[in-house]
Length: 340
Image (cartoon, rainbow, N blue to C red; front, side, top):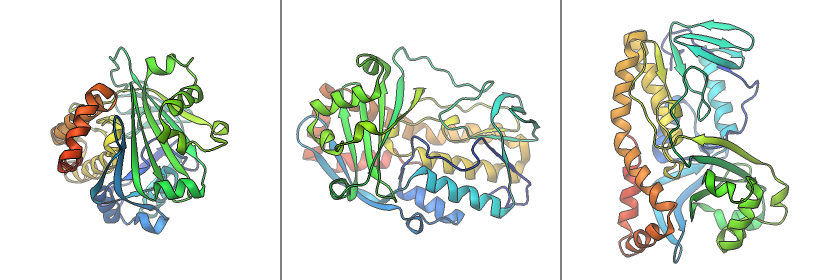
């Protein structure tokens, strides 16, 4: 957006080739609209269509149609194409690891960057000098297991995204373009500690108590690596910044991942920040940040309430029972967690 608007942006990335980020494998319908506006069509990259949501928690599974079609696409495929579009538009790509930020001064491993404006988009990972507060006594950790392709997995997950609810944790599963499935969990630190801090031991214990999850963990799953990210400040957001510094995505607001809206916040905030800068320059940052914060307040509150229900089966049981009687309640919740 910046390059197409006549700016001369530099994209600083620590990876020479985009990797497969832990979260963000589901694209909602509004996300797809934003991507198409940028010139990226997820189905053209092999994205898997998602028409239904299935909830596994207390009682019978609950299934509902999504308001509109979503898609399953790996972050590697998405980020690779997005970065290529940025370079094609005229952005300069620099490979460096940013170690610290002081105002608009960015210290990398290889170079010190003196920016007129800074668009901070480091995802769930903080950079020294711009750390987000972490006040929870029992913080949430992110775990991801990539399930290898199989006929059984493809059959069970075709056209759907699943949410599995556990005590002090929940997990989402969706198919990706290469036939693998992304199993991403938000787990309280205390629950992982009960299993010696070992993600594989925790997953095995959850599978032992939850047959539907066990069916997704096919033979050989223990050989796969479990990726982790620590102390994710779910529910945090900010409307404050300094002139010239625009906070994007998880660096602006960390919506609970069960909403499936993290990528949309990243895209909407990036597009919005670019538009604000092209009109008002560095001085537009504080007003942009405050406006984004107000815009996200409702979806963040609804997603936070859903998260608190999801990780407490005693609370989730009556909520799911109500949703079975009135499926429109779940559809309304899904809509309430979307951003405009």
